[in-house]
Image (cartoon, rainbow, N blue to C red):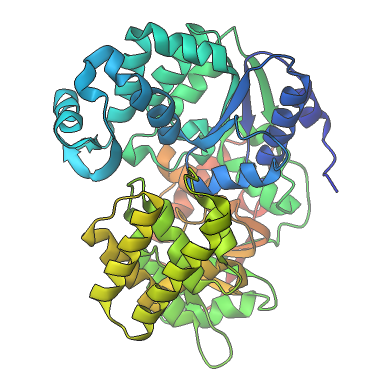
Length: 511
């Protein structure tokens, strides 16, 4: 049964033309966007299609799963795949010459010095690489250059797409923003962008939330704001809304703030004190800034009666070639009991072989790979995976095959694929984006709250919680900095007379 729409969600779905949506955490952003895509496709009377563009394969898969009935002609994929598959590969030769009428593939582990170096790399190896300066985006610089200088490319895009939807726009960098605005302003393709500057936690790698804010000021975009958090309880909504100026109008007058606790403890007794505050029947996440801290916390919280599982990022997560999907699919097949050969078939980007023989042949390859895992023979494993990749038309690298082998052999990496079944989890807050938990444990020392970055990080971490937030204060200088900054933020909130007690409960323990 489909979820009903709130008044603002219904307004967004029924608004035509260019739209920008500010969507705070827990407001039903994906549901709204998918519902709008469905309606726009139903209302479209031309041959044109839509492009739904996301930052991750996982997010694209979620949208695709919610739109099972739409035609394969529509594009649902990542930012990079849109720029590469729709623009760079088919039209680069129009701008740079016939030397670029060739097979191309991505490998972001190959680093280039500058734009010209990237063009040469494609000519010499067919590899679309990434710039050493992580805040510069070679793919989107190239895509925009091609669109600007290829008449055929511009006509193709205008004749194919009637609307482009861009998710998590606050994570776009300057080059992505320039590209999407060119498609909107110059090619006049209607554009729907949704995002939230408060959830921008990737500025360190080039995200430019100011781009999202600049669209908010453009006269050719209808502006919509989704602020009602359907995920979190009232106290958590108030606490998270207090952190950022734009959401403070949503703060409500509530008496019970006990769902947000600041626990004063110390470095020796904090595990006991925190466990006393948790309902261990509920799904709980500890979110830390670093992987090392997340690992250490899981060990300290686990004993004979309770277990917290540290979820690391598996080795294959760093692979960015065209074959990355296959490594993930193979790992999922051997780690997740319910993952079958049919699931692998569903995620093949371009099914180039006949379906009747596809299942049988892939299964035969997987059986051979399984034998190498049983024998713990890494070299044979790599050869068998390479054979499957060759069959499907994908290239492999030994360094990536070794990462895949380690991902499957090391059982600690399995937790990444089995997160839904884990009761108590410990991970970085960067990895938690898009997830939700009944209870969330945070550490004051991870958030100085004295910069935009730190406030956004804390906002994202806090809004993962549905029922309870526990913030651990260990009494060190970083903890005191958090507390001081938090009080300063609260002091600027209008019409709040109770100070910090109006947003959270102080729990004095052994500190």
